[in-house]
Length: 94
Image (cartoon, rainbow, N blue to C red; front, side, top):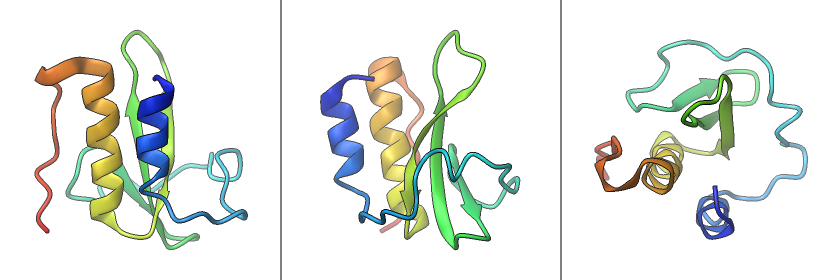
């Protein structure tokens, strides 16, 4: 993922120094979101966005967000950057 994409995703986040990728690496609940690449972290009460990169075994952490829709936007940005214009995009209801 290029720096421009990372900056765009980071602009969606509200900074919280207590939330970092290594602290959020634990298992998350399944099927907690209506959006692809998004799940709810009950202990943190935040939404996590992640995406699987082509030819990689693990998912890439995109960040934690206060609401489900913002996490879905982060997924959409990363998906378009990784897979191009044909990438799956979440339909976000505003």
